[in-house]
Image (tube, rainbow, N blue to C red; front, top):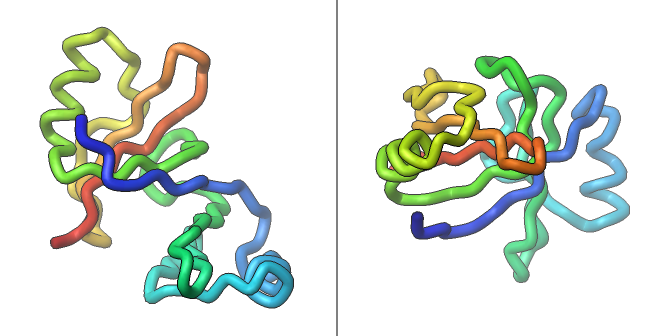
Length: 117
């Protein structure tokens, strides 16, 4: 799999309540990505980013990171071939991403995703 970038997914109880810390204190700005249950914050200029997640809207577990790739279908096939546990099947979600969740051998759940083109 070719990884384009990795984003930390932090669990928060309330995105609106957490926003002040991440935007005011850390200086991150909200992108055009806020679905209410997940929002991405980015550092202007550096591209450093983090996603705040209250509870994934479609999957049974929340991921700890999101791994962005152009070939999510190939990544899914490889994960299956290697026998990794698929936590959330390969799906094109209503908000436009194509993704699946895989459990790493250490127990962490990883969101492997291709964003809209």
